Image (cartoon, rainbow, N blue to C red):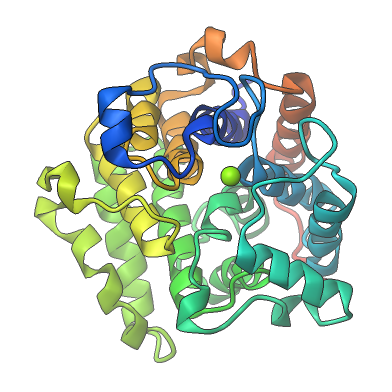
Length: 327
Ligand SMILES: [Mg+2]
């Protein structure tokens, strides 16, 4: 049976591992020595196939969703990752984003999960976007295939962002991303999924009083000419808008999983997360079989990550469940 969870999450994981050794390197350095496959060591001095926070937090969410959606439980998983090294390749959490760390500390001090994420304009790192993909399978299983645009489903997405990233710009990034991912999952062509996925999400937010003033920042990514921008105009920083733009640009300027994620890595800067965000959608579109086995074969704890994918796929393939929110 097709496992679309595996397509997406292993797309995130392999891309994360490709980008990690060169995280923070400048683009011009990578232009002269581009990443062409799995490398070991580098920035964090880890062996080839090591994945980082992007995958850890993604599988934390996926593992938590096996029991349904409970914001406390998701935060408990995040806490186990940061403090106890669970959901990591080798028992220690690393590459922890500032916004995510602050939110987990807030939770540890007793704050309500939905109040843990920073809410200022400066709190818009890519830390909720990079881990949001598993939620797609949950909302589809709970709300049905026509979940998009239903306020209850959209609120769930925003709340899962809020756990670590509470500014609406980050919520919208997650909404845009899952809208595109959903159309890919429905079997649409890649460019059409991106174009129509962004368009319908922008339309949803434009009709919401609380969101319409936050949309202008997302105007460039919707333009017809966006894909044709030269790479010099694409920023690959850890700012959520830059990361989403860079990921979409890579998807629109490549024709395979490999070419997409290598293009993302070689943009430099936040290499692992830009690649992970692009890789999740590329994995969903091109499929697990398109990920080179020579890359998959060195992924740390591959069976462990894939087992979480198998279990989430099984749970989310069951009949539509009644909505049970614990918060
Ligand atoms: Mg990372």
